Image (cartoon, rainbow, N blue to C red; front, side, top):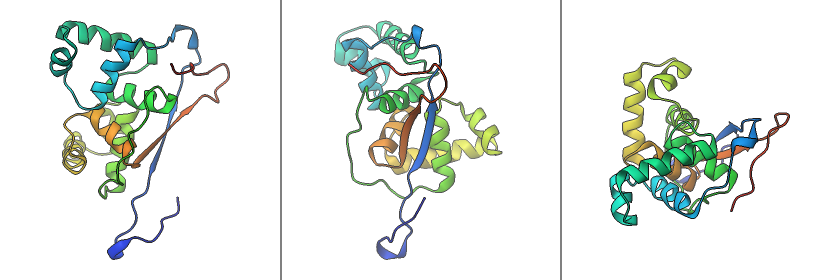
Length: 180
């Protein structure tokens, strides 16, 4: 990727491109209900299931049930992966924010791992790092993006153009649902 000029001699932030594979078995996928979309949007915003339950007037167990159904509907491993897939599929759109703070190449790689739904240990293995180093990178990412959880970090990185999500449907027989 080409880097352009930046103010004060600092290099311009580069967007990390994250390519997410969509399962070839699209028959098990379905559109999200209005309530599931509300829950997913609140998750992307960094709300906990308890905060979501208070805001929507439902129990935390019902929120957890919605989250499970969202993961199944999108084919996601966890909340961060669901947010990335939803952005890539156009189910939720990024709220454009000013460009984000400077994050290192390694921090972008860690963010990409989060977008793929990997655990800290899996990200560490993929990047040949220790789990503690990945945790340190996560703490720095959270501080720089002013977020508190992985799903919110992925959402903020997309909104601030630090990550670009492209859902790859080029595999034979794969495809995405049309967003509601």
